[in-house]
Structures are given as C-alpha cells and as structure tokens.
Length: 194
Ligand code: AP5
Ligand code: MG
Image (tube, rainbow, N blue to C red; front, side):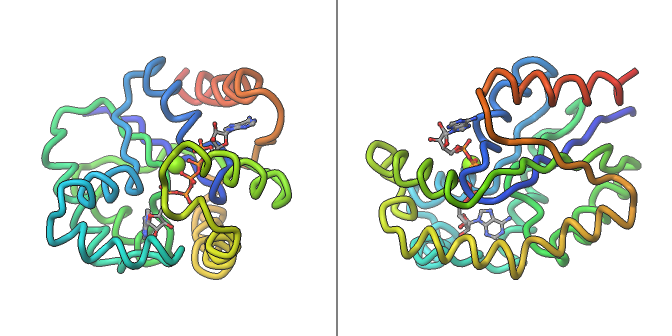
C-alpha cells in the first residue's frame, strides 16, 4: 500500500505541533507526536508515564527503548493509515534507525524530513510564553528550556545528518506567521505528492 510519511524536525518550540495540526487536517496523515503520547501516559499515571515523567521534567530524553516500543504499538493501532506525520520523533540516531526498520517491515519509507529553522532567542520567547498557560512542566523554567536545547544539539541534530545522507532532508524558515510557514510546507508536500 502507498503511504506518505513525513518527519517534521526542529528544536523545542519551533512549531512542529502547531504545523502538524494543520497538516493532519489537510492531508489526512496520522499525527504521531511522541511528546503528546508521553504526556497522555503521564496523565493516566501508567508505569510508562511514571518512568517518563522524571526525564521530561528535567528536559532530558526518555530512553530510546521506551519511545520505540510506544511508536511500535501506535503503528499497530493505526493499521491502514495513508501515512504518518512524525513530530518530535526520531530524536536520536538509534530512534531513526529503528524507524527505518519499522517502516521497511511495512514496505514503506520516509518521504521527506522538513526542518523548521528558528533562532534560539525566538524559541525561548515562545516557550516561556506558552509556559504561562500550557501547564507543561518543561516550559516554566528557563534552565530546563536551555537544557532541552542542549539535548537537541547533542543528541537530536545528528538525526539530521542521517537523513541528509539519504537525501531526504530539507530546511525551511520557521519564523514568520503560522499561515506563511504552513503554505511553504504545503508547497513542498504538494510537489512530493505529484
Ligand atoms: P515534545 O513534546 O516533542 O516537545 P519539544 O520537541 O520540546 O517541542 P515543543 O512541543 O515544545 O515545540 P514544537 O516544536 O511542537 O512547537 P509548538 O508548535 O508547540 O517533547 C517533550 C519532552 O518529551 C522531551 O523533552 C522529552 O523528554 C520527551 N520526548 C518526546 N519525544 C521523545 C523522543 N522521541 N525520544 C525521547 N524523549 C522524547 O510551538 C511552540 C509555541 O510557539 C506555541 O506556544 C505556539 O503557539 C508558538 N508558535 C508556533 N508557531 C509560531 C510562529 N510561527 N510564530 C510565533 N509563535 C509560534
Ligand atoms: Mg510539540
């Protein structure tokens, strides 16, 4: 079966979640945000959620095996999807390799990786601002926000290299209005879907 799988890539606060909601509505992809799935587990106080919470509160990554297992079962729950939009996953090279393998088993692959490019100054502003209303424990404290950027640089940026080697990686400007950024992404999507 033909599937279209997109990765929205970028640092914390770059707009992955915001753009995902709009893309899912337009293209009918299944949104797979590991951050959202983990926050649901925390809200339900499952063993997985309890394990994940301390990592998330400190701005650290949840261990790969926990996240990969969660993605695997989300795939099983969404058999027949026309494609997935990955948001906040993969975040390590090990996760990227696990995803490649999972998709290969389904006889599909990643069509494109789109990275939202936003300055650190703007990111901090956005996250502190969201922290006022979101109730997200990792948005309230600037120290935890900076920690998330450091983790992104050290552990997640190498994922970009992985997809550059496969010639699937493309950066786009992530500053400006939500509407303009969405249109830029749709332009790229529509070309790929032709
Ligand atoms: P996760 O939930 O993935 O958070 P994140 O990557 O840190 O990113 P955010 O959700 O904060 O930002 P976003 O890019 O979605 O931006 P948004 O659209 O919300 O991860 C949280 C934690 O879970 C991790 O730290 C880790 O512990 C764990 N985790 C998750 N996935 C994992 C994985 N795969 N492996 C291991 N651990 C994992 O926008 C941000 C704000 O900006 C919003 O207020 C929005 O309204 C605003 N905004 C958006 N676009 C614009 C714009 N164009 N102009 C102005 N403001 C804008
Ligand atoms: Mg998000």
